[in-house]
Length: 221
Length: 221
Image (cartoon, rainbow over all chains, first blue to last red; front, side):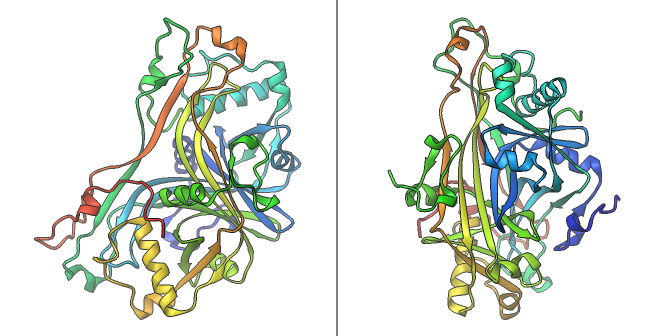
């Protein structure tokens, strides 16, 4: 089992749930859709939901060049990015041991703006394929104006840790005899059947990747 | 439409998606299960997923008294708590306009430890009922040891804002003629049928609130 590579990302509470290997961290990141990006402004933290992607051992973020947060991150402000997948509600006999099954990744570090046009286009491809695997080949690609208006960041995954809880409740020994139901309510994000854009031009068929959209780990990049 | 009550929580990017009325903010919080709690340690942000609850115009957080983060928050460190509900993947004709439908709430402020035993027990009831509506009456209630080991915090919702995107893609006018499918892939967390604890004592039936668990807004409190 991999060891933590940084004190800052060493799991302290429920330390047995901590995981530090790339495979685990990448798989959680690849399954998630939304990350929560934290940054500090004069001691005040802000946490903003964003889409993201992954390219090897780097997370990709993007946003408008007009976003103050994005510009601060591009300037190297310390950042924390967290991705959480909720797998179930753990219904223990006691209130105290009631919990959740989850897989989360916490990344700390500093991001870097991606300025090379080819590298930036590749990052946008990864972002698109993360959100909708299979889409890049069909969609209208970014034009010059859009490229200029988009800030793309790479955040190394060097300081990252995962935390995972699985399985049934863990009640106190004496509570198992109580006449109280206990178990797990599994929780998984379900993609419904796609809804066509009301303005869809006639004769356009729904692509397979939309019709069969499922949220599982994407290609490992 | 309600106005923002604080500059710090005024939605700037895509300002038309900002909402500031209590009803909207409460409904999003009541539907969510996991919040992301951000705090700063020497300019370094950390973002940690946690469960939560709501009591009127206050968010409830809880954790171990052994958690450094929880103790810092109890001491009044500035905090940001964000809840995000992902409603769909928005597949636009252009990569640039591809997006997500979501409802999110961002709260900033300072939390306060709940020390009064009755108030603390009420907060734990609200937390439990938030996670598993209907559970409090069945579960084994917190004992003295558990109460002492648990830090409970109230965070006022005075500085909070919601941000919401709904509806189909919004492509550039000239892109609507492109022969590219576009639409929305709805996304909703589905609770599967409950799984009994393998150690469940014989003869215990699954309660209705577990069998029919659905994630919708809980009572407004």
